[in-house]
Amino acid sequence: MFAWILRGCRDECSASDQLKQAHDVFKAKEVVLQKKISQEVERAKEFTKSGNKQAAMQCLKRKRYYESQMNQVGSVQLRINTKERMIADHTGNK
Image 1 (cartoon, rainbow, N blue to C red):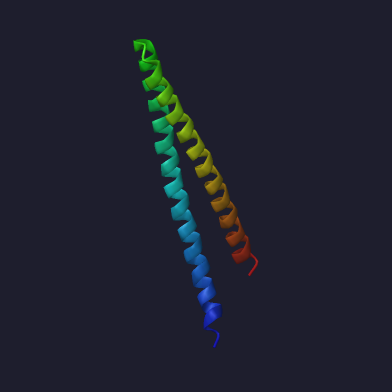
Image 2 (spheres, helix red, strand yellow; image 1 turned 135 degrees about the horizontal axis):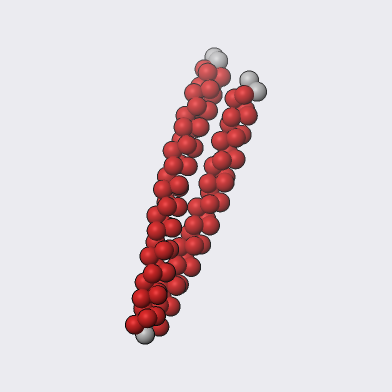
């Protein structure tokens, strides 16, 4: 009869664990994207030195794409942090 009350506590605990795991995944994605951005900048510099402007522009376009992905990852991390705080506040008020 009161199983839904007890189940609620377990779901909140697992939800916070899932949020922490998701936060770790997105943190790793952010690191990978930062590496890709720095690689594209270096490649663009090399292509510019060798006189291949078209390839350099392609590198800069990929860099811009990676930066937009990084912004999206940052906004997702912000939402995850907000949800973690909401769960912590909710469990703290009980």
